[in-house]
Image (cartoon, rainbow, N blue to C red; front, top):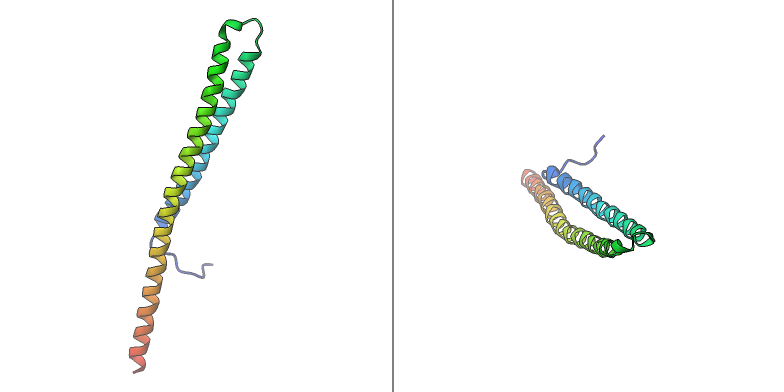
Length: 113
């Protein structure tokens, strides 16, 4: 049972929540890819018979760090944008509720007079 009325912009609020979850999934995907590159790079560097491709291990380690940096940067950037949108939507919701309450009080005051 609901005790509070649903805000008018519920769809937008839920869309922001879905976007936050997608942002977290994307960060985890970047981390997973970075770890795979780390393991692959370390594995290639450990091969004694294939010293001619050790450069590939170093490239994998460098790309691993780049992947991780890009993933964290994109996560932080989108989180900040979502925070701004979240504040805008909730301020609109609160101001609508305040307007409705104040107009309801005005009607009651007019009826009393």
